[in-house]
Image 1 (cartoon, helix red, strand yellow):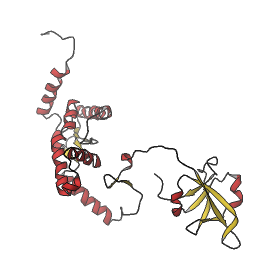
Image 2: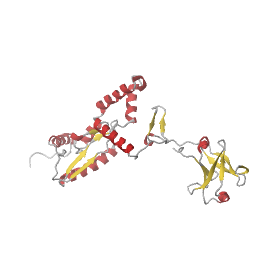
Image 3: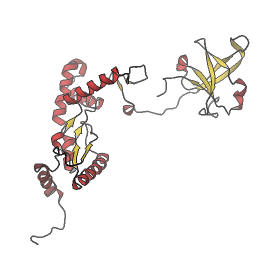
Image 4: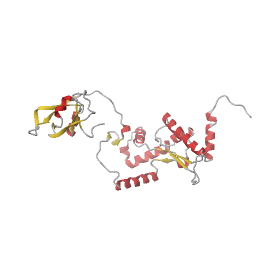
Length: 288
């Protein structure tokens, strides 16, 4: 054995050298080979705006272990790398950069702003790819993709149209999270919920008289709610079927104040008998 074994491992002196050796010799590249069993993994693309964190490290190391194991077992293994455009996150980062120059996206206009986003992506988008390589990920870098690559966008558009024409997707009216600053809808994952103390309001909903079909003058259900402003959209009042206080009202209807509309009194085991009056209003499309 020649040379002296150093007592301390220095990753900087070794890891980059061996990774370059792997890369230059195309150890991670998979040619089409019908004699081998194919095995492929598509990396969950990290956001192009960010940096790798411990979660990325764990996730990608596990994929790397599987990919290397399959190669050693003789499979034609491909691990496809890539990055995600990150949507609103990238927009916010670019807007912040423009804000340092006292420019906003409305001043630029859509076309110029999109160009700024692409310029930012070309400048900073390689950061996270470099970090994946530093982790030693055995990805097939010749197949690296970006979620806004033109061929992917065309494929997504084509399949979207196909799904629509086949009646598998449709446009409907749904509650969305609206950001007043971004002036756009955002996903649930982008929303931060804050718990704060509020008021619990008790509102009388008159019962419908069985004989006259009109609101009763002396029979009513007290509904407890933190959202009285949504009562215009109420479709029912719910009570717990085990709540003895409301047993005698089973099958009845109540009169919705202000709207002058009759809505049913229903039973649901999810109603908390100990919260407020024990009866709640049912208002679709108004929950967070």
